[in-house]
Image (cartoon, rainbow, N blue to C red; front, side, top):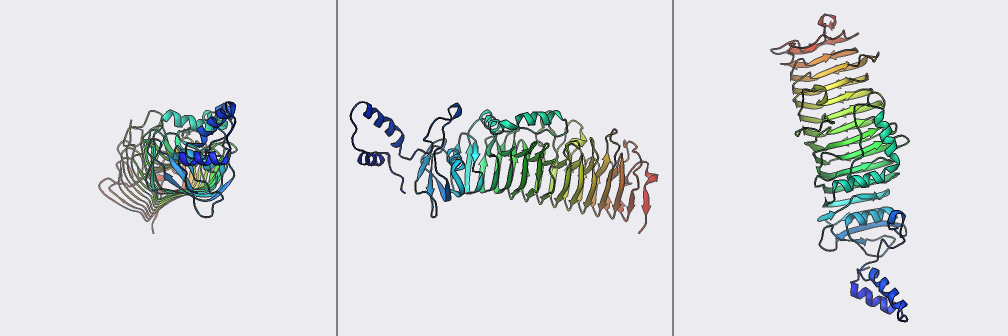
Length: 505
C-alpha cells in the first residue's frame, strides 16, 4: 500500500518484466516507463475521448479515503490513501485535489473522503464532483481556487450545455429575477444524490463562485463551510431547475459567505425546486440578494445573519434584498415558505429605487408564507418587509412577531401594484410586530389589497404622511388592538384612511 518511489517502481518493473529484444521493444519500454516511473499508478491512463479528453479506466470504488499533500506547487499535488474497509489497496497520486475528486467522481459508488488539515491550491473547477453517496470532510482544510474566471465559466457552461437553450428560452419569458450560468469551484453532476460537504474553507480569489447545479439532484448538504471572496459576477451557491429538472432537499447550514456577488440563489424556471433548508448561515457584503428563492417552494429560511447588503454599488442589471422570495412575475409561483428568526441588518440602496433594496421581499406569485420573529434594521432606501408584487399578486401571509427598525420607507407594505392584474393581494395577517422609526408609515396597505388584518402591533415614531400618494381602499381590512405612539402619527396608513375599519378590544 505504500507509495513507491520512482526508482523503486522502476526496479520492480524490471524484475516483473523480462528484457525485450532491442529497437522496437526498447521504444515500447521507454514509453511505458514514461507513465509508470512518475512514482504512481496513472489514474488517468486510458484512451483519448471526445475532443482529446482522457478517459478514466478504473473499477468502482467504495469505502473511506484520505487526501494528503504529496509535495509543493500550485496546484498542490496530493495522494489518495485508502483507509480500512476500502475496495482498493492502491495509493494514487494526483496533480491536484480537483483532479483527485474528479477521479472519485467517475469511480466512487459510496465513498468518504477526509482531507489533511492544510492548504490545497487548485487551478481548475471540480466539474465532476462524485454524484452518489459521497461525503467530503474538509477537517478544516482550505481550498484556494487559483484558476481564471473565464475557465470557471467555460467549465460551468460545458457541464450544463444541454440546458443553455432552456436557459435562454426562460429568460425570454421575462420576469423580474435574472438567472444565470455562473463559474463556480464545484459543479455537481446530473442526478446527484446523498452528497455532503463539511468543515471546509473555499477561498475563491474573486475568480469563481462556490457551488452550482442546473441538473437533477436530491439530498445535498453543505455544513460548516466558509465561501470567501466570491466575485461580483457569480454566486456563493447557484442552483437553477429548468424544464424537466427536479432539485429537492438541499440543506446549507452553519456556513459563512463573504461575497462581492450574490449569496445563496435557488431558482426554478419551468422546473421543480422544493424542500430546501437555509439555516444558521452568516452572509456578509453580498452585492445582490443575500438569500433568494425564485420559484422555490415548501422550504425554510431560518436563523440566518445577513448584513451589509449592497455595500458596494450593484451593476446596472442587478439589485439586492436581504432575503427575497419571488414567483418570477407569477410565471413560477411559490407555495409554502417559512422565513423565521433571521437577522437582516443594513441594506444599502441606490438611485432612489426603493422597491429594489428591501429587508425581506416576498412578491409576485407567492401563496402561503410565514414571516415570523425576524429582525430587520437599517434599510437605507426600501421597505422593511414587503408582501404582494409589482408584477403579480400574492395570497396568504402571516407576518408575526417581527422587529423592524430604522427603515427609510414603510416598515411593512402590502399591495399589488400591477394595474393590469385584476386580482388582489389578500389574506394577510399582520400580528404582534414591533415597528420603530419607519417613514412614511409603520404599516401600509396599498393598491389592490384585501382581507388584511392588522392586530396588536406596537408602532413608535413611524409615520410621516408628507409626499404619500393616495391608494385605493383596502377591501375588507381591519385593525385592532394596535399601540401607536410617537411624533408622527398615524402609524398605520391606508389611504383614504376613513375606509379602514377599526374594532376596539
